[in-house]
Image (tube, rainbow, N blue to C red; front, side, top):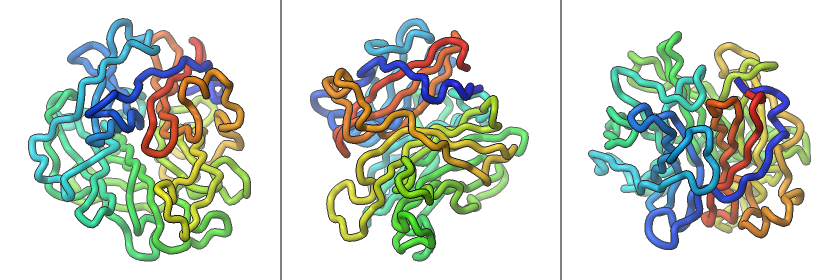
Length: 348
C-alpha cells in the first residue's frame, strides 16, 4: 500500500538508465514498467527504448538496492510474429499486473500478458496485446487489436496511447487504462483539445473490450498542474484512499494550430497523483492539488545531470525493505533518459 505522506517526500538519486550512444535506446530510455521476475529472483523492467520503441533491463544485486549502476539493459523485446504489427513497429510496452500486489505480474493460463502501443500504416496509434510463458519473452501478439481509436467526436478519436493494464482475479476481468487524443474540441471549458485518461474492460471469456469512457480529463481549474493534458498512469492500493494513481500530466493546453513535434503534449510534463475510493476503479477519480515537483523547482544538480523541460511517465516500485522508488524519464520530447527518486522505509 502507498502511504499518503509519501506523495511529496522524495529524495533525488540521479540518472539510473542513460541513453545508449548508438543503436537501441539511443534516443529515449523511459516509460518503465517494473515487475518481479521469479525466474531471475529480481526485478525486470520493460520500457520504451527508442529505437526501436521497446526494450528490457534487469536489476543486478540486492532487490532493495535499485540505484544508479544496478540496471543492465538487455536490448529490444522479441516477438515471435512481428508481422502482426500493423505498421511494423510498437512502443511503450507494459506487463499486465496484479492490482493488489504492486509490481507483480498477473499470470493467466500459465502466461504473462503484455500490452503495447503500435502504429498503423497511416501513423495512428492503436493498442495490441501479447502473451509469453516467460517475462523475458519471446512474446506472441494476438491477431486482433485490443483498443482502437474512437469515433470522430470521441475523446480518443485521433490516437490511443500510453496503455497500462491490470487483471482483477476476483472479477476475472482485465482493466485497461489508456490515453486518448481527440480530433475535435471536447465539451470542456479548459483545454478542449487536451488528451484524457480513459478506461476499458475485458472479461476472460470476452473477445473484445468494452470502453467505459473518460476517468480523468484535464482539470477544469486553470493553472492546475494537470489542466492541459493527461498522460499515462499506474495504480496502487492506498491507505487513506482505496486507490492511488501516479500519473504524468501538464498545465499546458494543446493548440490545434501548433505543428511542432510536441504539439499534442506541450511542455512541461509533470508527475503527480490522483485518487479513487471505488472498489472497482472506473469512476470518481480526483486530482491532487499539487504535482510532486514543478519544473522551475528542479535543483541545479538535477539540471546539470540532464533533467529539465519535462518529467515524463512516472512509475513507482515498492521495495522489500518498505521503501519506495520513483522512476521517470526527463528531457526534451524524444531525447529522454531515466531518473530515480526514493522515499525511505516506513512509507509503504
